[in-house]
Image (cartoon, rainbow, N blue to C red; front, side):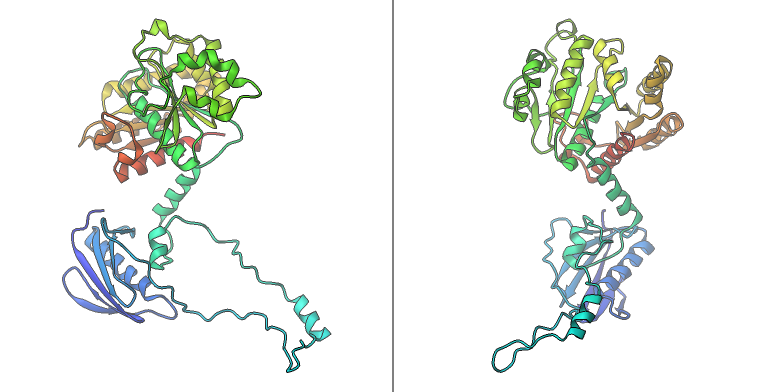
Length: 423
């Protein structure tokens, strides 16, 4: 949110003086036991809605000094680079009554409770301290301000999406990222989805570079302690599947992404395809290892749709994600893949029908093109998600925390769409 004007509120006890963006002042009061802070935020939201833009709200007074951004859609956020000490906790209702203690006589002995009183007490149901309807929400700023505003529809949907990407299934799940054309966003889609699942779900996510021909996932992610690739893992599969193998033994063969909390199984981009092809049997052995050590595997596929490892990836995938950029060739390749899968066999046809297409805006100012591509795919697949242009995705290391907030939200939404199709 980028503010275009300032508004002010000075709080004194149960009333406040509000100054709108034109400099006019007016009193703000509450009804009943409502907190004055709620009324101030409500008035500020109305002002932002009337302005049609985000406003900068500065409050001061006996409830503390605060610097906020109020959106036209009702969103509330801390102003960048501002510090916000929590407001005092004010009790607006009296303490609930508690059971009276036993009466103590002057001799220091407790009086006995009468049988009638004991019977009355036993018939009265005990009130629980736990509210079964309470829902935990990630509204840290509102909690620090002592506000309990109802969540907006956008906040509720974001909460639902975070819940979806945090999900743990019984057994390993697999996601194939596929498009037969190179340079269409397969690697960045793999890394971003893995980061979302790893960060929100607590790790145990593997991004597998399933590529015969110079896969670049290893180039765009962090290297771990050991300079190993899938060629090093293959001869170690029996050892890793042994009954006495430890959970940390896989570490020698994968590259952990510290901040994003997922692991990368690299191919070797320095070798020719003929030197690192996998048979269907090789793929199955590696998959058994992956399923033992990880709850979720995301395949960054190659471009050879006839390769054994590509076909076995499709056969074992629980979900299919088809990335495309805002370019005609990229979108056409994605469409051809869907057509080919529909004619391959029944399972591939079901996989295509339940696929998620991710359209990434490859250049600034091409959002209308992205929207047209998304609309064209919408009747063909289960869901289409758009990712706005972000320079951090163009080149260099792929790190979730380098993205703009809008891009991060878009990737969480995309990952949630994929989760919704996994069983």
